[in-house]
Amino acid sequence: CRIGTHAMVGATSKVVQDVPPYVISDGNPAVARTINKVGLERAGYSKEDISLARRMFKAFFKDGLNRSQAVEWLRANEDIEHRVVKTFLDFTADSQRGLG
Image 1: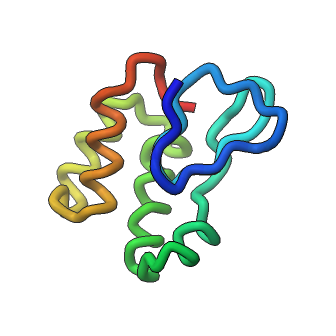
Image 2: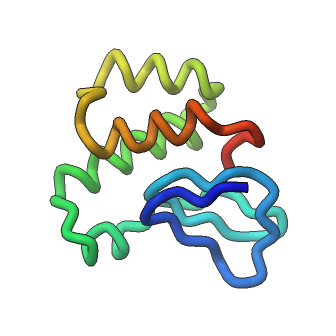
């Protein structure tokens, strides 16, 4: 399993899938819960970057879309050259175990 940049995993969580960038995962098995807002703020990300991360999280984990639908939504609605989007898309494209 891989853990993305600025992601956070809860203590004693059982990680069986990749944890994408900017996400907090927790539980047994670990499930994506929300974005790591505090970690992103501490790392110097802007409010716009954090808002973008929140929209991506919603598309991938809350809107009921599968991964390919979420990627298409992201490509249609966001700037795919933005560093936050690019990092997230690059990570998800390489995922072999699914996202959690």
